[in-house]
Length: 212
Image (cartoon, rainbow, N blue to C red; front, side):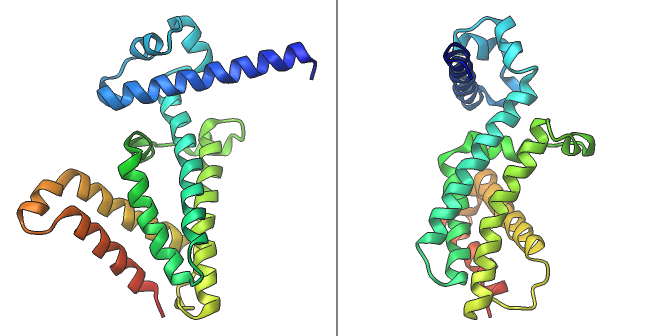
């Protein structure tokens, strides 16, 4: 790549990241439904026309934030695993890392929770939906590695079946309890169950269900 072309590519990537930063800020302030492309253009200090050159609609912006979130989540899961030797402890740490991710990065968490893709989009290797699917597989790979470690060291049951399905089930369970804590946290607290206690106990329950 020629120096001039390389600089243009770098400038384009910086502008794209700046737009995503602005979108994250707008989505955080207004929510996905109420945010407008005009709001994002103003926040990014670009014209509406230029915004649409980078992202064709709000859904594409949302999915680009999902990619950011998935990359960050994979890093958090990997770091969580690295702090523990036993597989069962790695699984528990991954669950807590997901809770921390949801609390620290609500825009990414909500973007991922809202994302829906059609089969044709997932089959298209050039689509952002396909890229999301591949990024999601890398996230699940961290859980699968923890499961396999636990089966080798004897801390996780060997009769669980398909590791990917188990990883997806654990993710689904954790995602569900996180959403409950977010939407019903005040009710839980009023009933004498603080959200933090609810989340920690739920993760321990999920971990015990697969422990040997």
